[in-house]
Length: 192
Length: 192
DNA sequence: TGCTTTTCTTAACCCAGGTTAAGTACGTAC
DNA sequence: GTACGTACTTAACCTGGGTTAAGAAAAGCA
Image: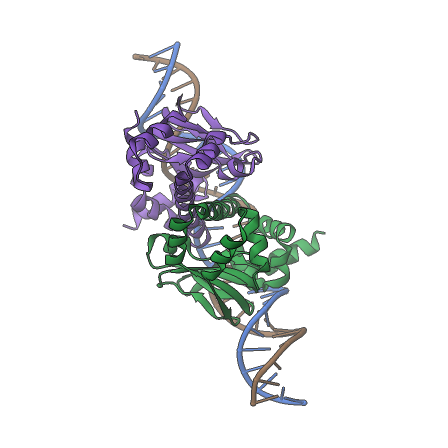
């Protein structure tokens, strides 16, 4: 149940057995069926979750269209930073793209953890830092790569996404419509 | 010299006089003339800096074209997170758009600070968290706003950018060419 | 002051992605 | 097995940003 979490945590900071156990007592397991929501826009994000199994995404809704922000797999932490940190309503939807098992931590418990064991501030810092790196890479790619280049990078750098995520979701992640992704795929197939 | 820094730090965490003084001893003032570089792509980012006066940007270079990632003004901290944290060479250029005064902190000094005064882990965490929020907002906007919408939001939300940054840099920040920004501005002027 | 450089705009043409609409393939529930 | 929904593709037409080239306006600077 907690093997994956342990491996993941230990990469961030060394923990004694007691500290890990304490951390685990703050977590609540939760199952999500495919298409079920972890968070909806308009709600305040009061919890973060470790993905023990399955796959989730977050997306934005604008004029009735979904825009995929990111895909998450086993070992990732999810939550809307903006909302979680500021207490403002989220503008993101998190839902499961496959049946999923989560380990959920409440905002208040995390704040208490920071207060009681300041060592875990490092956990929070490193987590945030990793999100920064990912988010900046994504921004850069949206800024100066063409959709075709983004598609090729995705194939190369995140094969798991290509294997487990439907193409129309990938199109949305790339910032284009499914029809355009089909066009790009055709173009690439012909020019090989 | 350190007034702005003090105000800025105190918003993150309460400090004793001694702690603040200690923090300040880790900082080195540095002046940058307009167009001078704080960091170039290919270098490892071994320092972060507080902007005491002036304005900087970071940009990416692709096929000879500059793509503005972000603009920074007084009170902001700058540095390439990706490079600073991983020790990998940066792919960003930081340069001054106006003459600037910085307060520079070395990577090793920051790490020592974390070790000696764990309380400052919070400083690092909150800083990273704020960067996450900014970066995710930018990603979202690039993903689902049109260039025209991004331009209108910029006028509304960051008037300082409009006042102090040349339009061709703003175009690059919006993900379009200067000619297209001119077109958008004309369109908006006519349709009012 | 006059000269150069930078900044900004305009216009004509091109093209990748959006839109609309239709069709195919596959899975699954009944 | 059939019917339905989901996923994916194709094609015709449209549109907004890119490209190229030129010129106007403002800012530096000698």
